[in-house]
Length: 234
Image (tube, rainbow, N blue to C red; front, side, top):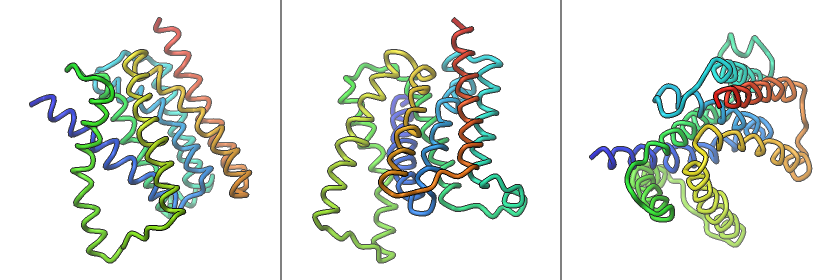
């Protein structure tokens, strides 16, 4: 029964919540803002590993969480304190924060797997569980009149999303965590904003604003502190 609960939680946090909300939020927030906020996931993983007592943590890692969360606030509010006081957030930014927490919980709980399954079979089990919980949301969208328009660009995009961000990234993430743990794996996520920001500027002509720089500085500082904590812990 414990294994069933774990699979259900892993499916909900990864497939049902994270995958759905990330793509939804990017309809409203800048890509640069999204990927910079995603870069806080490494320290959030450390936070949840500490909360769930999965992997050891220390003061440096806790400080890293605080610094990175402050960076997220800077990006969400666009460094405008009035935005924070008036709770006038971009809903895409807020949904992205929900997605970050969901992925961090998923990554931390992957270390709790005690049963024997191949990585491919384990991934298939998680995807199946996630799709079961995602089905009601899909049915609701159909009832609200949101129809699926199938055309060549859609099929090409779907094929890319399924093969790379879907199957390949999930498989290698599970494999990496099984080998080096949640905390050490999470730090590699900070490569996402580096490549994504460059692609957003080149492809979508987005501007890199000063609040992006300030938020990124605090996020990177948090990641550096977390990495220092891991080195000392050894």
